[in-house]
Amino acid sequence: KLFLCVCSGQRWKRKPQSVPRDYKESYRMMYQCSFHSILLYCIALIVCGISIVTDIRSRKILNIVTYPAFALGIIAGPTLTLLYGGTFLEGLFHSLWGFLLGFSFFFVFYILGKGKNMGAGDVKLMGALGALLGWQMIANAIIFTAFVGLIVALLMFFPLLFIMVKSGNIASLKGYGKLTMPYGVSIAIGTVLAIGFRILYIVGVLQAPLFL
Image 1 (spheres, rainbow, N blue to C red):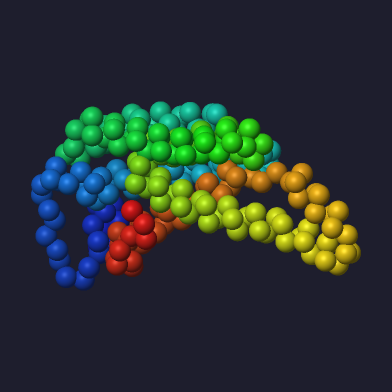
Image 2: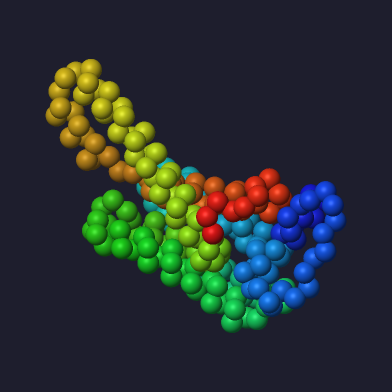
């Protein structure tokens, strides 16, 4: 029963609940409560896993990963929405808004940092994930990514701080500016957390979603 609840997206309760029939009354409910949400979540998790590996190894987010993910979000999302009672345009707008939110939010930081602190691959990764997950889920992912990015930055800073305190030489902190932060890892982990907490809400572990 729990597996069926996860696939259908309905909250898992011990007492049987009637399933609302009119999904068009609330598109948000329909999108979060259908099997294709779980399918797109799985695709997003695969994209995140590959991006973590490539970003750690080479500090790169590959176009061969982000471009197909974007295409899947724009094509598969609206198609599956149509199959589950919505319209193709509803699904298309949902994916496009997700792409625009994820891409534009990180594009601002890319421009402000002149590509030094955040690479173009990070921006494209967030846009592709937005196309897959929609604007509400990618908004959650952005919030989680901010927290994860802060933790990663602190973990990178503390070793240098320890060296400075131990040696008494403040010049050792100059090495911090030369460190490159694999922000794609923070994006991927933040997205995984957003998906994980959404699934916990679906199966009834959480009484309410953390954010949107």
